[in-house]
Image 1 (cartoon, rainbow, N blue to C red):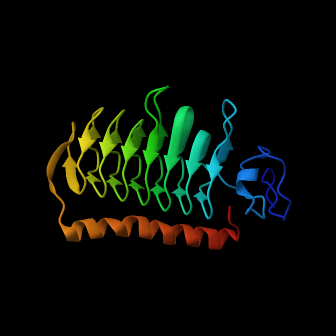
Image 2: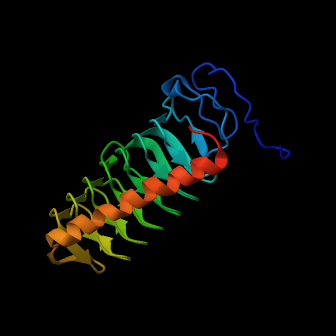
Length: 213
């Protein structure tokens, strides 16, 4: 074992909120059998993150405060979910790729990702709702009060301005983002490949690490 890294020896589940360094072993995760080297999971203002089954957190991910991650979610390197002044909810099978940020607006706008959402590398969601199966492209930004419809596609680098409502199954591009066209049935089906790919990626990471959260 490398110096400064937590042990992976089996251990009983400790008392609630006894995270340890880069460890999630609270009463919200009684399925955990090992102390695991994962991202930072931190309580804030009396609220601790709740983590579902088979969730993958990269070592440099940070999950803070009032955050709930559904089953089979993956959160990748250098990504931050900061639920300090409102709540963050992430639905099952969603993936939040490297260098993303999810934050909220105090007492006004929570952040919610429904099931099977993909956030591309470097994307930002701030106090917005992203409906099931939508894809937020690389370095795209979705701002306060916006709502991204089911299976919508926000292109790379797009800026979705506050309180914009993006219809389901549409393509939006630009800064500020504008609707370009509706997606075809084939394109909607193709969006599903992204979250499915990340389910497979996280399985391989778990296999290499020999542990589950």
